[in-house]
Length: 165
Length: 361
Image 1 (cartoon, each protein chain N blue to C red):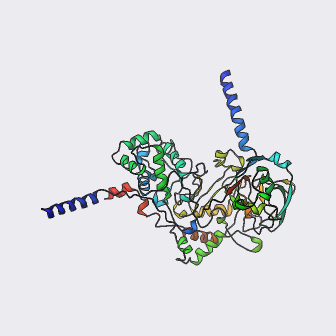
Image 2: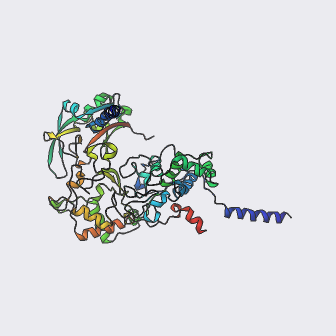
Image 3: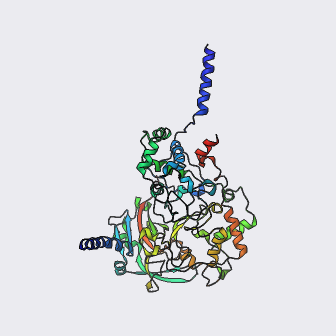
């Protein structure tokens, strides 16, 4: 009996970290980066935030708050700022969402040395966490005519080289 | 004397030509419309060859893949139903039916997640499951390989495809995957329309417009917005959404794979090509007709925390929870869905059961 209990406890202990890892709200930054990152909600909330306004399908403007994608890429060691030149201009960022949706940005589109537009990875809408189905992280691209690149439930940011020969 | 020998040899040659089926060989060339794009899901280790596709077709219809030698892939994926089986759930070798509805196999070349919950990322990975599942074929890969190794035909074919006659589970699923990648459906009236060879009727045209349009009652724009997930022109997307079938889904769908609560009740947005042939509908085959499917989206969307955001904010009536289509609009949408039926796909001899053809001979 005791032995069975021990096995059960052991099994639970082994399972627990796996379950936590699966259910935690985190994003991964990977690909052509020197430091692949896993950023979870708590840690993300402590990063320096910026606001961005996005016009949604209903035509109304909404105020989001989050971290500039360029900052996240910088932390991961992607080629941004002064390093974004030469062959690095053929790199792109693929944003993957939990529902399978994918959108793409060229690195230059996200970089403050190229543009004043600040694309953010938002974790707040009008001062509150994002609603179910859209959070915990959403890409916000201000000034676009369609919200189609503002992907919901972002789970991965992947930097790659264009593979065209 | 020489002449007699020549005639004799010619007769022998003709006899051999007619009695022995020639196995085609060489790289297999895929043909598909440019508008499908070239984002193909082909495993680099398993390039398509004519001999591989030939073997794959035989194996797809091979009943020895099942423990009682009575069920093949083709049993639950019949060509006449666009490779589904017209049943809510399928019966394999066991006493239990399958837990989900048999899926169409058209245009898998572009699919990146297989099964209703997307748990396999390649056809090679997907193909093993039905062979092993107790309610489908109930076999082991070792036993199937041993059974095929004892036949006269298969070791020769495996040698032709793989260089030696060793039959393994990996080789079996690789060949089946090659055959399945050739199941391209691209000759429906909708394709002919896209290629400028067919003019839709007014009803079809109105259905197409509804299919492609997001409803906006404030601007008086009517729409069904099907295209948001069933993306044109392939009519599917590698997306997982909860389409509001139940507020408490009995089958948790993708959540079972990812362990994430926000994946509850999410399933793949499958292709609508040939959907007039693939009834019943949904992962649990709950709807018998396309009319019932449209009634669901039009009037019966069930709210839950994981309901697709695209179904939450989409209606032709301000504030309504479902899309709200008129009876006429539903008929128009069905006319458009019928434009996606590819009759040449379901009669193409390249995809048919070779064993049936042989019997007919």
